[in-house]
Structures are given as C-alpha cells and as structure tokens.
Length: 464
Ligand code: PFF
Image 1 (spheres, rainbow, N blue to C red):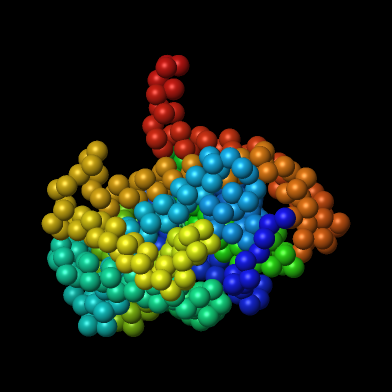
Image 2: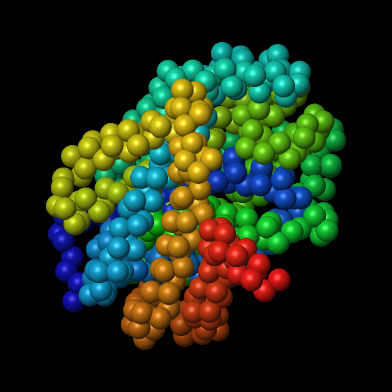
C-alpha cells in the first residue's frame, strides 16, 4: 500500500488539472519552436508526420506518465521508488529532476526575451523594421546586453517562482485558470488578424498543402523529438501533475484533452504566424529567429501592428510561464516529498539555484559567446542535452517501465479507476493503448534516441 502524506495537495477540479497540464504542454515549444521547425522542414508534410507522432506515441505516453503519478501520489523519484525496489528506476526519476533544471536554464532565457519584447512592443520599437536585417541587428543588440538578457531572465524566473510558491491549488491551478483562457483568446485574435491579411492564402497553403518531396528522414526524427518536448514528456512533469490528481478522475479523457489542446494551439499559432509572414513577403524558414527577428518586421508592416505586437509577446510569455511552473514543480515536488523540505523553502532555494544555472545560458549571447563545449555554447548544450538526450531517454524508460516492469494487470487496475465506462464500453481503446505503449512507443523512441546521439549513423555506416 502506498502511503499518502496528509499534507499533499490535490487539484481542486478535473478542469483544473487539464488546464494546468495543458499549460505545461503549451509553451515556447508551440509558439516559438513548432512554427520554425515546420518552416524549416517544408511545412504541411512535416505537420502530417508530427500529428501521427503525437497520436501514436505522445498520447499513449501522456496516459502512462499521468498514471504513474496518480497511482503513487509522488514526485518522479518517489513514484518509481514506490513501485520498484531497484535503484535504477529511481534514478530515471532523478534524471527527470535534473532535466527540470537543465530545461529551465535555457527556457527561462528565451522566455526572458519574450518578457523583454513585451516592453519593447509597448515602447513602440517595432515600427521601423523594413527588413529582417535591421530587426536582426536590434535583436542582437538586446541579447548582447548582459543586463537586458540576465535581467529579464531573472524577472521571468521570479514570476515562475511566485506562482509555484503559492502552491498547487492557489498558485498553479489558479494561475492556469486565469492564464489559459487569456492565451486562447489572444491567439484567436492573432489568427483572425493573420487570416484577414491579403496574401494569407499562401501561408495557409504552406501549412496545409503537403509537398512530400520536402520530407526527409531527418524531419521525421525532428517531428518525433518535438512531440515529446511539446507534450512535456520524458521528465516527469506530467507525472508530477498526475500526482495531484484523485483516482475519481478519468485519465484517458483528461489526456485526450491535453493532447488535443496542445496540438490545436500549435496549429493556430502556425496559422497566425505563417499567414502574416507570407502576407508581408517574409521568409518562412528563418529558423529560431522567426519570432524575434521576422515577426517584428511583420508588425511594422501590418495595420494595427503596435497592438498585435504587444498581444503576441504577452501570449508568448504566458505560454512560457505556464510551462516553466511545471518544470520548477517537478524539482519542488522532489524536495518536498523526498527531502521533506517546506514548499516555500524549496521554491526559494531551488528557484534561485535554477536561475544561477541559467546564467551561463543567458551569457551565451554575449560575454560567454565564445566559450564552447563540443562546439556548442552553454545555451545550445542545455537545449541539446535536454531535448535530444534526457527527454527521449526518459520517455523511453518511462514507457518501458509502464508496459513491461510495473506489471500490466496492475497498470490496468489503476487506469480503470475513474474510467470504468471506457473499459466497459470501448475495450478497443484500452487494447490500442496497450499496443502503443508496449511496442510502438519503445521502438520508435529508441530510433529517435539512437539517432540523436549519433549511434544510428554509426550502425548504418557499418552496414554500408
Ligand atoms: N511543453 C513545453 C513547451 O512546449 O514549450 C516545454 C516543456 C515543459 C518540456 C515542461 C518539458 C516539461 F517538463
């Protein structure tokens, strides 16, 4: 029997959990990363593959992670400890806690830019960029300023800590209930603005008319890797949020909601961004600078650009905030459950520590730009280690644990709680989940993982 500590908080409602978990999923990944990787990988064909990855791997693993959390009512380390005696599995949870720090360290830097860009847009800075070159110079002048870069990152971390400090219900749940509706409304306004610009059709065609020849093996791997990142999988964020859930709630339907909202928001963000990028004749494949360098040019050119620029960076910052709180919460839940720290102390100490770890990433754009590990700056290293190693490896091990180690009979008993109706009326859904989590997820994630650490290339070379 797994003991429940009395002090452990729970979500106030099912919708509270769904909004908080969707808030974790919907973030810079949807609004900053998804549009630019779709742009770099040819648009519609890439999106098609991405949707398949989300459905056959993303959704089943979300269910698995939330289930681990809800069953054990523990942080990622405690969750594995509760179900297995082996230290190896507890260290998978530990890897999640470390990933929380690592992701937060570069995430808070980009989120800091977004926060700083709210101020820039209010100051009316995005009025005079006739071409990307000038907005690029502007972006570089801001990020090369140590005070600007570290200062806004610090402000963003302080906001994140403030919400987590207030607790699960009063901070994370309440914050998500306020911020998520605002996010959706702003995004709809921006989508309508984009679609009513003349020339918007070209942007829509780019997103929805597949050109299959543009799809490469590499894009398939990028799509699967991104499916993980965008759904906050592989590091115990969904597990931690699941641990505040009661067994009365239906994990299957909640997970479908989370995945649906995350995908919908990525697509709407794609529409809002590409319709305006095409309508103003900008390059859709501009890469990571799409948001911070191309969009300011768009704002200069479209009617109402002043107000839309403020709305856009507000949206981006809100999205980043609801994700960053989940990253910090993974760390906090570990210190509260396992080390018996008080939440407030954990937030202050670990939040500050996460900020310190992020400083080298923030300095990667100025004084530490030339300091490289394996050819990558601190910022790029943190992104690479998290997105290409920690998350896929974590996701792989979590799906193996749920499908092969925990004991599938026990898994089904837990999953059934709150979802009795699905088990009785639509057993094929359960069978499909079983197949995806047992076979598809481990095999496909292994391929991505091996590829991203370059092993696959070596193996293929051996056969050539
Ligand atoms: N899902 C977030 C995004 O798309 O921006 C990023 C993220 C948040 C990844 C939380 C992992 C995580 F645990």
